[in-house]
Image (cartoon, rainbow, N blue to C red; front, side, top):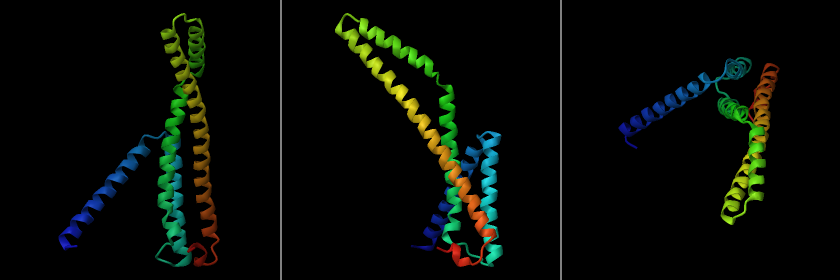
Length: 174
């Protein structure tokens, strides 16, 4: 590839990286203070793990699994964003109102005299049933994401413990 194309490609990659970082920081700014604190603590812990590895091993180069902490941190931010949006949606739902609508639609379907009205009410009943089922799915996914967030936090803490008590650099090269 010609030199000028390499330069253009390098600049484009740098521009994309800056945009990505700015987008990530904007996402974090939208978090609550408590969520931002968790993100910043994990960022600090990630940096501390990498710094301690360099300090305790005397190595300038991080093994790939410790370089991957940057991606795990970004995964944490993405998951936290998903978690907060789903929790917020669940809080905005009035489940009882939807159950009441389902009961009313079911009664209207049962008492319908003509087929066209009955089909319309049947469709409404099915939609409301799917909506209630989706609430349950969202609740399950919130619990799953909570577990994933806790796993990432615990993994970072575990790595920090291991780095502080490191005996050989090879232990983390695998």
